[in-house]
Image (cartoon, rainbow, N blue to C red; front, side, top):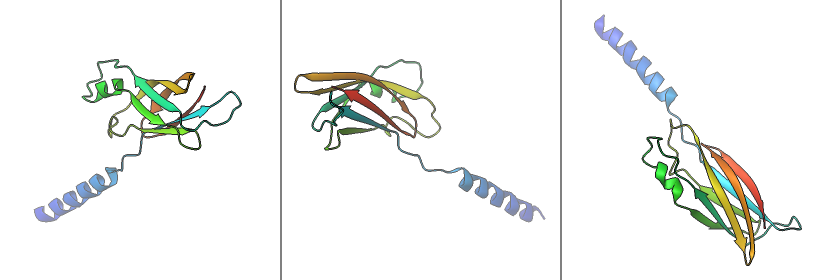
Length: 125
């Protein structure tokens, strides 16, 4: 009788464990760079700059201070992946300053990156 109870308990624990596992979704920031004519700009440099607000207890938290840089593609889009910062079970967001430039033209903005979502923002230069 005891072994049957242990078997049922073990199966129940396995079902709960399997059901609670989920794949971590991507945390992506997409920046679209547009010119004054509302045309997308290819080849622009986009920099996302974060500031450490401290106190989160996350050992990767300071990593948001290191700027990430990308160049816009033919559709005027620069994509940044922040999977290295966000971990399952962690909640919260990060806010980044956006600096986009091409030649002498510069545009600025702000983006709030949500955990496990694709967040998009447009900057005009």
